[in-house]
Image 1: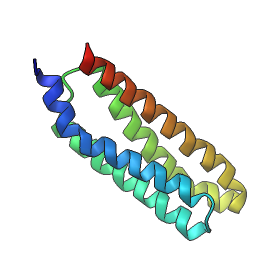
Image 2: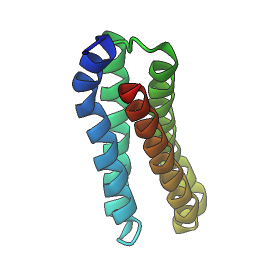
Image 3: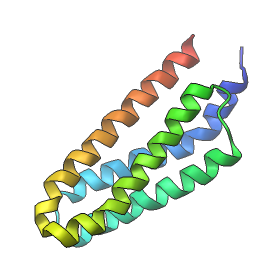
Image 4: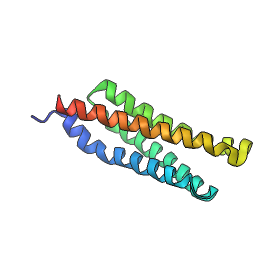
Amino acid sequence: MIDGFDTWFKRAAHQIESLMAVTNQAQNAMISEVPAVRSAVDAIGSAATEGRRWLRTNPCPDHDLGDRFGRLFERYAAVAAGFEEGYREQGTGYLPSLTQDVGSLGSDLNNFIADVQRRLEG
């Protein structure tokens, strides 16, 4: 049986895929030069902005998962916003911290996806 959550998830899949893509881009950029990292961080910021805008007009019928999805977008935006200040203050010494932040985002995104899958199954 298809309920409102199933329908919402089909529409949300693009936003989830976007977060997955920018997370992978950022992780790959960490072994590159700073311009690649900056480009990846810009993509993270754009995905967060687009996702927050999408979620405002497409609220999740499962309030708890919707809140978590919104907090994911907020965290992605915070990582993107913090890059320039961190890089300005620490130079390339900031990259290990950024690498850890991006890894944490990826882990949290995977946990969110797993919880969505459990919700769809149950």
